[in-house]
Length: 328
Image (tube, rainbow, N blue to C red; front, side):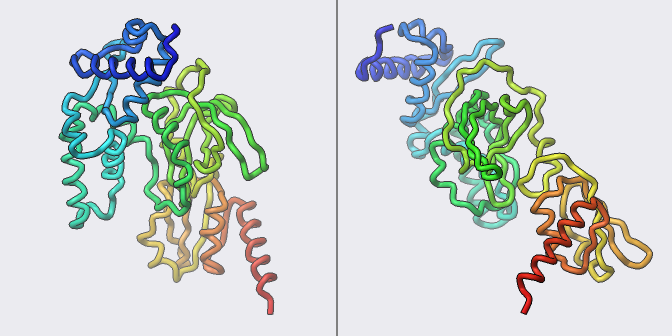
């Protein structure tokens, strides 16, 4: 395998493109590798380069075999001047349109995505794991523009169910660690973007804030994909961007808070109970996080933490520090 020069690489990629363009049958990675006398990893890099050049490729599983194809109607995509990744972004954003859906701009956006779908019809199935990779609809407060390269690598790995090696900085203990992970999706929480992943280094699910990922690359590790890991269940007990063990939280609000709380959606686990004296009790099954503490503190003297005790102590300490800092 002496095919290492830049010219021979370009010729090989051109031949691969012509091969995929000339047949609807497509080719497997092994077929392309044998045809050009290179290894499978080289073909994978070639396909990534071809995609980056704007040619929409997709893979389909046929039994235990995966065949690569070129989108036949890709000239329509070129005329629309969209890459496959950009078209996928349209489909993802459509799913998150939310409150704009029934407005004129929302209707125009839906029309745009319908046009993209006409071109991307063969890729609908492939786009599903990408559109489902995003959890949460909170607005993003931080500027993540500097994380573009890391995002591209992660995005591709989620799409292909490929493992990643990453260097992650933890501000909690000021430590840089190396991890091998299975990337499962992105999570918008507390104005931040997190990578949800199964961490083989810790042997459990973890969340990694995107801007704290210092380095990420495809992993050579041969590990089983965590088929049974449910990312929705993983974040279901969170209150803000904190992962941990859920506890029963009981909050007791003053009678005057009834109207405010009656239509308030705090968490999926919430249950309200009206006491005889007019107080309202709120029951939650969540992780007692800093986000929860900050939210409860905002009610001042109109709320009492019934349980857990450590949350009540944290709230009292927070109020006491506030009073001390603002003494006249």
